[in-house]
Length: 144
Image (cartoon, rainbow, N blue to C red; front, side, top):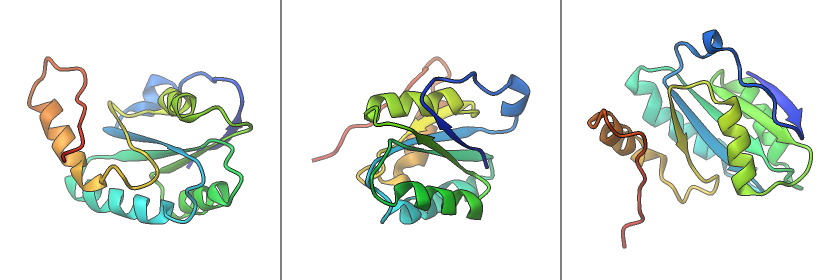
């Protein structure tokens, strides 16, 4: 568990610290305290059976509700949860970039905090990327 409060980018963890983590899930959070527990549980249900180490970075974008308290609680309960608390609102894009700076995994997966991106689809993205070694990135689109 690594919880920080920051307004400035900080250096990435040393390379040695990142060994062993396969997936980093970066999730910018704003007004999402009510359902973050469900999101983390669904991510764990999908990734734990894969047997590869992962981390979930929950970046609180200075949410005015109980989002940070929820993140703290989840980080204490789950070793794979990392909480980052921004001192002021930066917006979803910058909060995501902050998560990228702290990510230690070989692959980074981004999700929204509102459960619109079903965690159950994460294996589809991983399998698509791993099936094409020349690819650097995969993206999903919403089906109608």
